[in-house]
Length: 147
Image 1 (tube, rainbow, N blue to C red):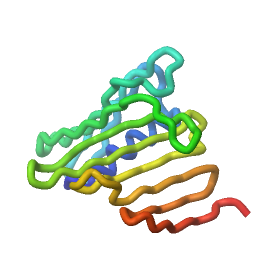
Image 2 (cartoon, rainbow, N blue to C red):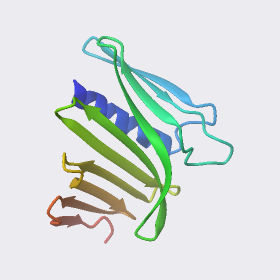
Image 3 (spheres, rainbow, N blue to C red):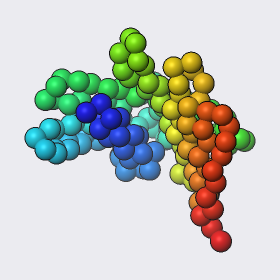
Image 4 (cartoon, rainbow, N blue to C red):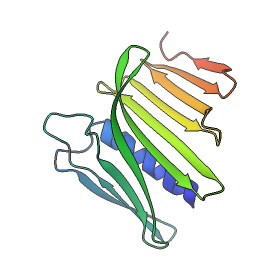
C-alpha cells in the first residue's frame, strides 16, 4: 500500500510540474479496489513555478495514512535551474528518501531514491528526450530519445 501512495504522490508532483494545476491549486480523488486516495496540490504563488515551502499531500482515508512532499525551492543541476521536492517515508528502522526535480520548461526531470546511508540508490534523469538511469555505484544506462 505504501508503494501505491508513493507512486500516486509522484504522479501529483508530475501534475504540478507539468502545469496541470491552476493558481488556485487542485484537489484530486482516486478510487481503486475500495481504497480512495485524496491528493491536495498547493496554490501556485503569483508567477512562481516553484512555490518553495508548499506541501503536496496524499491521504488514504481507509487507513488514515498521510504522506507529504515538500517543495524546497530551486537547485542547480548540471547548469540548469530545477525545482526540488523531497519526501521521507517509512518507520524509524526503515526510512526511504525520495527527491524529485523538474525544470520550468519540463524538458528536464530528475527522480532520485536515497539509501539508508544517505547516498544515491538509484537516479532517473530525463533531459531533452534522453533518459539515463544511474545506480548507487555510478553505473549508467542511457536511452536516446531523438534520432
